[in-house]
Length: 318
Image (cartoon, rainbow, N blue to C red):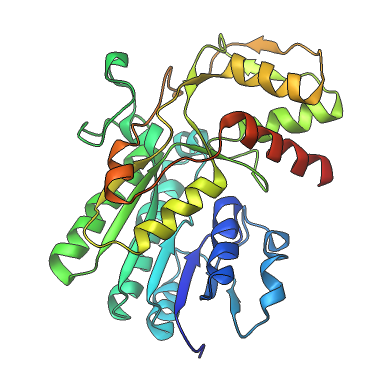
């Protein structure tokens, strides 16, 4: 049993999760990572391992397993950060059963563990773009007052997660916050996630390969740097009664503009090829950060240019 404050991070060997683990350890917490390593990588925890096994514990478990509930209940963490998920939007369309098993049943396993351990707080990663879905563009950037309109199994699973989080608070007194994340990017980014376009472009441009843009490239996204997203998880864990808030910049960036910015930073004159657009993808998305600023004191501090520079440097080295 670890001494002192213990936080559990599901999906802690993943892109965002491992960055959160680094921060928690650096600020004096003990951390237990739960990850099945399907998309996460132990190498993402190399920085964290310097704290030793007294501070960092790793459990290779699938969130769908009963054992996850038992492990969380036994460890009695103060805080549970739930980031483990099936995050590929297109995969959720091709295999909605797996998506629901992972994102709905997996979340229930985690919530049950948190309830049985009398945890103080659960912070869950939701997805802003897929949760709000297709909305009137005049409403951009989207506010939390908008009704969810998920058009994919992935988006539906995140809406259901929010309902369960609210029910666990009402029924069992478990304080929970869902963070509707914009497209998070940065070092360690997996090219297969929602914001994977930045990791994909970085790899292709650095290797001198031709990039592909699906559709016109004028579709927009709201890109938020991983360190800023980690700030939001930490701040949400310290404040009670915040059920749901957006974590984004409120700024739309088109895929074409993103590509040109990255090509310029890398010094590439390569032009992308355009292929037909893919079904299920949104035309425009951006999240209003006003409530997060007011309720959490959260701000996006890293500009897109600065974040892209840091990300490109990491991909050069790795």
